[in-house]
Length: 286
Image (cartoon, helix red, strand yellow):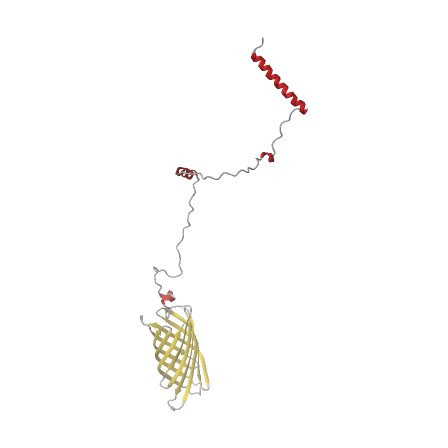
């Protein structure tokens, strides 16, 4: 007689076979596997439920230390080294400028080399025979310059005091400083000179020299000048004196001597005269 286990196994197999056959008979063919999911069907439908509020996670000091330890090390950017700062003005510790390179704030030297120095002035002469008035202008750079002068004299003759003679002397010379410093200048000059008399005009070469020197630290200077015209007329003009510098204003005074000879060109007879006397002058320096 068959056992109970054998009867149960036979009943289970029969039920399986019986269930699958009607399913195949209903559809007429074997059931196909479901199609693979597409992109539209693979995406889950959007959820309409409200999202849960964000809850910040509390971090502890140990977590911060661990995060810093795991983070890559970054090099600190190197700061560019700054060079010494150069300022336009003189610093407090800089040495004071002296000599030829003295700054304009400390005062310009009276005779030191400068880009351009302009001097103008007027001079009054008081010779024994009469009087005169003159003008001068000079422009001078570091070494080279020009000097122009005009002087008019009204003179009385010794034989006839009522008769007046007029002599006008003009000169234009180029100058070159052989010595130039803050203490003075020594120049040589060369150019032309003319003498104007009633009825005749003389024009000839002119050579000369001039000196200007400071007297210590005082505003006083020594001035000396001498020019010579060898022909056609014989003319020597020399003067020496003192000058007081009051800022850009100059006061000058001294002695002037003028020798003039016509070498017989006036009337065939040689005439010569010497005029000497004090002079006073006023000038400006730019």
